Image 1 (cartoon, one colour):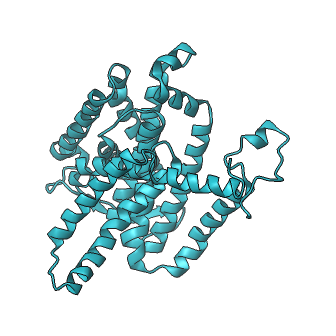
Image 2 (image 1 turned 180 degrees about the horizontal axis):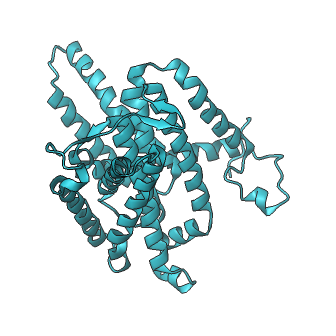
Image 3 (image 1 turned 30 degrees about the vertical axis):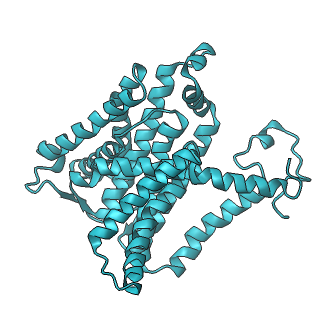
Length: 358
């Protein structure tokens, strides 16, 4: 009964075009962000930070980048892992080759390099679409996997092919504890989420959605497909590049090209399909599902097996995880193509209209 629009009047277009039209939504988001910054560090232990929260925040940012391209612009990609790898290795090289390079600047420059690479490998979207575009982006994945494995300059001539970075120092704040890593990633995610929300509400976001819905009609009304598609690839790759740099610098500390393999690309695509295409909240729902499900299965399946006197191996847990992923993807594609985010939005709409649905 507290979640209503009744009695809330707007007298300007600016008020009617706010990111959150209902004041309760704004208060809920502010309360959630405040709790994430202030409450979670006091309640969560080190294991939760390392195993769940930090990976969830970084993968949410990466899923947001994929959702911009796939969900809002309608351009399929299987090269998200490659964009993350470009961001991670570019940031690493900026750090070791430029004296006094701040870590935050290196991470952002890594995202910029990923955006440039995304524009290059997104150029085929001007001529092809669908499965053909998917193959083109898959080529980018294979190319960067080969480059980072074979070209020693990217790894600073490392004999093992892996690279490592020291703790990030941000304006005198050394980010080395799990709580520091969590707060840093949370700050980056909040900033990039606000930026994405405003981009999608603006002229650029409307062009992306017009191209997604019907590119021929979008061209007729004056939208330039080349500009819209390439900006979508650039922004998406920028987000993925920053996420890749965070994954390497904050979550891993040291990594090799296998950390950004094609499996990562499929994982991110699964996130936006399950979470919800064309919805910012879907990126968070999908990332939470992908991060929490393996941990839940690792804890629950051996327990269930012990109740029935069965031995559950790690390999069986891994196979069950893949089966559940595939089943849920098929389920959402058939029953609810817009994913968990659509179910959440439907529930909110019912609350707004209750008890007088129409």
